[in-house]
Amino acid sequence: MKYINKLLFTGSLLTCAMTLWGEAPGQIMSLDELFTLADKQSKSIKIFESAVTGADKDISVAKNAYLPTIDFSASATYNGNAWVSDRDFTNGQTFASPHFGNSFSIEASQVIFAGGAIHHQVKALETQQKISEWDLAAHRQEVYFLLTDYYLDLYKYRNLLTVYDRNIEQTLQVIHDMRAREAAGVALDNDITRYEVQYQNLLYKRTELVSSIAIYNDKIVTMLDLPPQTEILPDTTLLHGSIPQASENDFQEQAFQCAPLLNKNRLTIDLLTRKRQAAQSGYMPKISLIAGDNLNGPITYEIPVLNNNINVWYVGVGLKFNLGNLYKTPKEVSRLGVSIGQARFELHSAEERVTLGVREAYTRYLDSFEQLKTQEKSRQLATQNYEVIANRYANDLVLVTDLVDADNLRLSAEVQYVNAQINIIYNYYRLLYATGVIHTINE
Picture 1 (cartoon, rainbow, N blue to C red):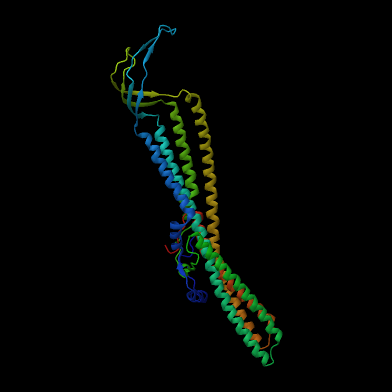
Picture 2: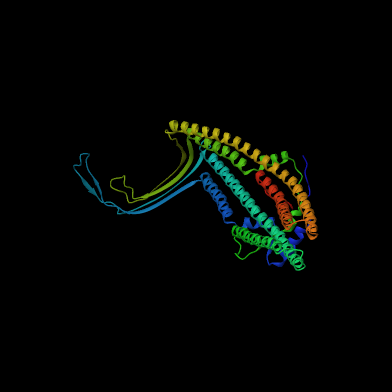
């Protein structure tokens, strides 16, 4: 199914909004710029970036197991005289012994076979790093979408402020005309009172809008760690951006490839598989090459003690095997096998949730276009109705209550039209969020 490729809104609302925004000092920022600032300054994103960096350091540490181990020790001692006796501790004799002793030793070992334990442990940590990267991507999507929500609310409230300002101006003009009619004796003071009540209601609603603008501006400023006095003005070209033409299947395929939730679940299966392979290496012995050198003095295993140094070096192969692994490893391997099965079920469940989420977001997105058409028609009809009622009131053919009702209907239609405009952009970004890739319409 094809839908609108170019989203173009025209009308007096946007023109008036741009005029109003130009009067107040502020910084015009697009969603692209907000996303860039979020990458640089968002505290929560930095937390996840630190986790990725930490995972990289864990890999570097784990790779140290590939490197040789070198142990060196040195000591200097004071030795007492030697004492020798029979096995029953009789006939003891004391022999003079050199009192200064020294010992130097160095040994190097290099693992040449560990049953794949080191390899699978490193690969498991590399997979863990990728999971951390997808955690970062998922959180970045959440921040982007939240910023989009705040940004569009800010945009909507500024547009609504323009609508209410125009209606306030028109209401004041109607009150002025009514006073002139009252002076001419063709209007009642009660008629003016009704419109003055309408005017006060509009002023109160305008106050609410100004407060909402301040609230959402503060939310964005706080998220981006900007100076508190920063005033953000939405980029009015957002409503003129083009939307790539795509079907639901295109979005579903993109979600299958890019959704952070699905990628994390796939990597979790790989991580558990690596851990199981590392556990299975417990069935195998560890084989190492070893080499060393020992220099000791004096030589104490001779009687009398020899005041000499003796140096011994060696090379060889070392073998180590933990017999306890024969009954411990099967349980660990079995446990990880169950975890892998559970992770596969979780992946299938996540795929269903993502599919349904994209389908719902896509449906809402298409509905928003129909909503805009409906609201645009309603606005036209409400405006025409107000013009007819206003003309009839000027000719004393209808009551002032009819004029007030027509004015309220027109205001409601204009508000709903503004909301429908913003709703299209919001549902598009909601669709991108469900897909797993948020980018701007202008890309």
